[in-house]
Length: 78
Image (cartoon, rainbow, N blue to C red; front, side):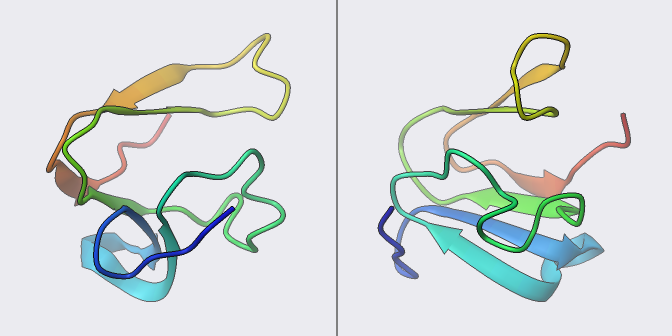
């Protein structure tokens, strides 16, 4: 994984882009490794690509969500 603050995905541990911020240029296979699993409350897709995520670790019984390019908002409760 590579981290880039200029472009990429920003995941924040508080609503409105507050709290701790995790930056991802290419993504993450498991947010537990990044220390933000279960604490992602807002997101900003600073790329020109769609980003896909899931609510569980095994991708079998989970919600898959798509974050469009440039999208910035709080993450809705599931």
